[in-house]
Image (cartoon, rainbow, N blue to C red; front, side, top):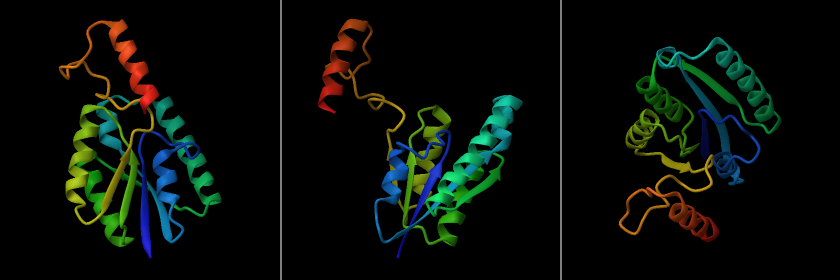
Length: 165
């Protein structure tokens, strides 16, 4: 039987979550969810105590919502993104994960982490989704594949891309 892992990161939604929906799409797959907290990395970025408390309350709500759907949520704590890659590998090995699902994050460190994860999990199918944006970054470019410098031509191209998406 297939085993799917939903990797929650900054986006802790259950409803209208493309990656979670894809993980649950197969009737013959067990679904497991994972959240990895990179504590020292958050400290380096000066996460406020209120933000940490809010995150904890959202994790509690996520765990309950997933439990109602029969999906267990694992919560792991690590120092940084590098350590999170090893945790992902261990969880995939222990639970015989065949596919990993997650929503893209676009920040520099997060994009680097995702590339490293996909390389490290060569035996796991990794599927990322552009869920938190209307159009994927870089999908609206000039004819020369540059960023727009003037708003109106960008807007026209954005509307055209959005209608074709």
